[in-house]
Image (tube, rainbow, N blue to C red; front, side, top):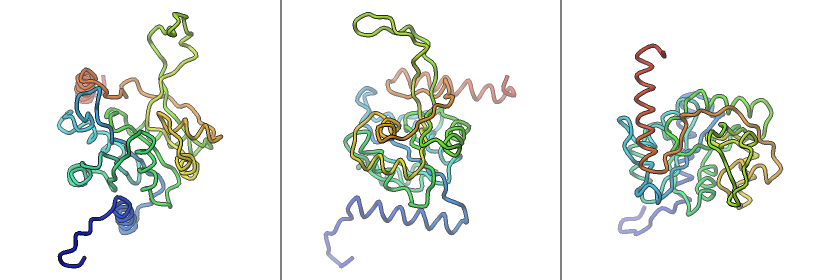
Length: 251
């Protein structure tokens, strides 16, 4: 850069630079970059009262736990955060190969993350940064379903509450499931779906709308999304219980 220049790198320039850096790191290590995960954490935390992804949890942050697990289960990780947190996250979130800024909606943020995944990736998982208790086994289960032939795979759990619609009609909960993340997809299928510019609350909806097949896999009851301060308390309790169980040999 010329001395005295006021040039500022654009988000697109930063995204491409970060992607090339991640690819170079993978090449130098000899590790295959077959499965990548996009961890979406660009929300403002309106219902939480602050950006929940940066809330402290179990010696790290909500986002830190999510990224650590993704890094254990995948060959590379892209983290999507608010624009003003990109530099801080690059320095403070271990396990992130690429950090990019998100958009104003969930779909825009997911799209930014998917575009940062190297072209060589065969499977892309998308995970909510606010789900810190998903296990590496769940990531593996989702990936295996995609490898088995599905365009997409989504973890689900049954509903425990009685459900009624707003008219008061009882809904058969046996026909309903709660959707979780990580959600996994054939990389080319997901890229095509998100590049269509549609908006949805999750990526599986975009893939299904584009005609892709989406398979359900068993989710995890502890894989709760942190949305309110009460959810953070529950996550802390679940994490402590899991640690205690590990000390006792899983009993």
